Image 1 (cartoon, rainbow, N blue to C red):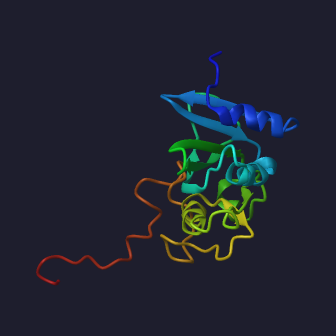
Image 2 (image 1 turned 30 degrees about the horizontal axis):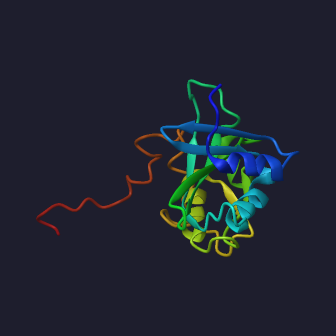
Length: 182
C-alpha cells in the first residue's frame, strides 16, 4: 500500500484516534473517507486548525455508485472539495451514504442525511441544495433546503443512476416551440 503523503492525514489520525478514517491519493490529489457521524466535526477541524486552515470550500458534489464495478461503502457519496488559500493546497473529504429504504421513497430516508456545513462555509448553501435536488440527500440544519434546479413538486432526483434517461414523462406536457411560433 502506498504511503499517504499529505500532512493532513497524520494530523487527522492523531486528532481523531477513534474515528474510522481511510485515505487515498490519486494523481497528487488526496481524499479522506469519513463516516457520516464524524464528518461535520472533522470538517470543522480541517477549517479551524492552524496547521491545516482549509478556509475555502470550492464545491460539494454528490455521486451515485449504483452498479459501480468496485465495492464501495455506500451507494451515494457526498464529496467536499476544500482548499487552503494560504498554502494553495487542496483536499477532498468523502462521506458514503447507503439508503435504508427503496429509492422511490428516499425523500424521507434518514440514512440519506448529513449535517449541513453552512455554519462553517456560507457558500455551501447552494451546493448542498443542488445535491439535495439531484440526489435526494438531505442536510440537517440547512437554512433553506429546497430544490434549486427542478420545481418544488418534481417527483424524483434526476442524477440518480436509476432515473430513466428520457425522464418519467415530465417533458411530454410541454408545448413544442418551433421557429415559426417563437
